Image (cartoon, rainbow, N blue to C red; front, side, top):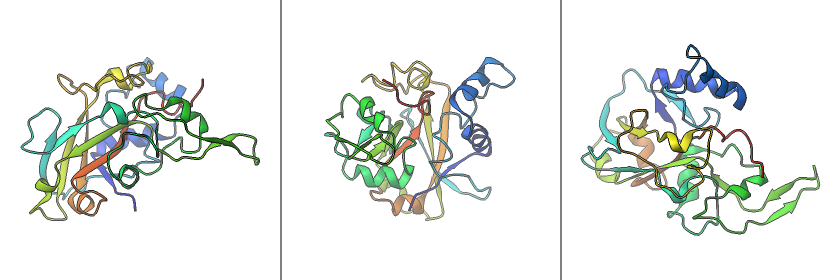
Amino acid sequence: MQATIYVTKEAMATAIAIKDLDYYTRVSLSDNESTDVSTQPGYYLKSAGTIKLDVLPTTAHVAAHISSCGQSPSGEISMPANLRGCIFERAPDLPDRYAEIIAYWSGQPLSASDYRAVYFQNPQNEYLVELRGNDDNGAYVSIDKLLSEGIVVSITGMASITDGLSPEDFIEFEIPIDVSMVGIESDGFLSPAPYKTKGIGQREVIYLKVSDITRSPNPDHILIDLLRYELLDYGYWY
């Protein structure tokens, strides 16, 4: 079962508006101020076609707020450099139960069937992925499974926060957008540089239901392949 990521009406509208646009059409929107949605909530969320998005109910009770700015009483949000980009199932440095957790919160990667993703592995988590020919169409396929491909958001320390909350409650998470990681130039995204979380104005806000957290593979550690960079749906070329 895949969990639902809840967002505001504004973020959902943006995510749906760009969901089916190809790379060139989406990026060209920013050429005109009247059509530019790159600063709108929801723009940097991964495709609404892979992540299970829904609008936060109007009757929702938001019981806690978690931020990466160090203002939260507990819980920690980070965007680990070693989990950014293409991560395959036998990568050498993965959190426990990574495959289960990432699938529960994020679903399948956009490029799950694109063998060229093996050439764009995270430098800190790369290994020799076996490729085999596919007689059906002449292309190669990777033997190992691609688990994630975007900017993974790691949220820890949730057990102490959800303890005592109603299963119907929601928790708000505020994710900063590091423009050096999400733009058309992918040097930052493909580098081992840390993701900036301080002094950033643009943010994505998501809400998770307490019942979804407590039934997840690890209720104390959430991992979501949540944010995309502009070239994510362009395709892998080398």
